[in-house]
Amino acid sequence: MSAHNNRYGRLAAQVYHLDKPIGHSFGDVAFYLERLQHCPGPILEPAAGNGRILIPLLQAGLDIHGFDASADMLALCRTECAQRGLPAPVTQQTFEAFQYDQPFAAIIIPAGSFQLITDHAAATDVLRRCHHALQTQGRLILDLDPAHAIHTGGHSVRAWQPSPAQQLTLTCDRLQTDHINQISVDLLRYEAWENGLLQSTELESFSLRWWGVQEMLAALRAAGFTGSITVSGSYAHGRWPTDADTIITFEAVKP
Ligand SMILES: C[S@@+](CC[C@H](N)C(=O)[O-])C[C@H]1O[C@@H](n2cnc3c(N)ncnc32)[C@H](O)[C@@H]1O
Image (cartoon, rainbow, N blue to C red; front, side, top):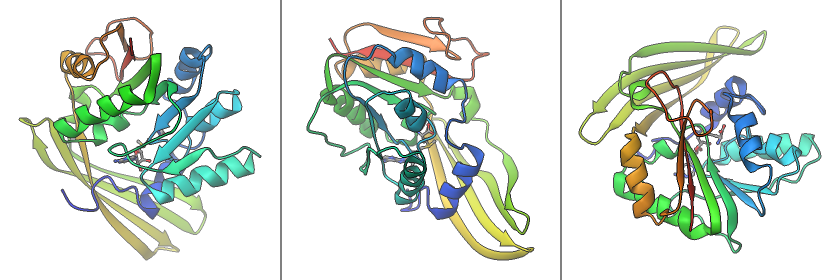
């Protein structure tokens, strides 16, 4: 995979922030607030990005920490925290190597970010790393986009207008769908325009891995989550998902 895979560079971060600003919810902000309201200790959000969900949880008084691989996403998060007079409890780390001194009472991975780890062995290592980073009785809560939402692909163009003279565009094309390894690869072309003149452009490849529900349950158990695991569709806690659901959540307890 190229070095620019799933990079979330400068224009990608700017577009993410315009499209999914702080507090923008897919139903997940209220869901995570509810699931974490009696959380007995610190919480970690890997791949916290611009703080879309981390900042509302901080504002609700939760002791939440985050990390992200992208310096551009973290810069947005830090600016948004500063504007609200909040500390910015975020660091630049990766799924594959993150480390903390303290164990967490919960780890949350919303927005399908776990699917950015496309190598199956690497993904299962990340589940083990999460297990290791949790206290006993700690919970890992992660969201997956369902397989059917990922493996179709196609072509799309979207545009944002941060100011009357400025336009940002994102063109997305499916490059490859690998059904054996359950990985989609899209080519994302970000462009920044001013008064109709192209100012800058960034090309990123964007890869996602889709998971079967039973496959994820088996991976969680193999990573040590041998306690209860709750699977939910569209943030209805405890309701087994159906094909109509747009998001599937796993809540696994470390025994
Ligand atoms: C879909 S965004 C999610 C941001 C935030 N969690 C939210 O819910 O809005 C995915 C994030 O994953 C980060 N990311 C991608 N690969 C990563 C990796 N290997 N380690 C840590 N973060 C990574 C990206 O930089 C990006 O900020």
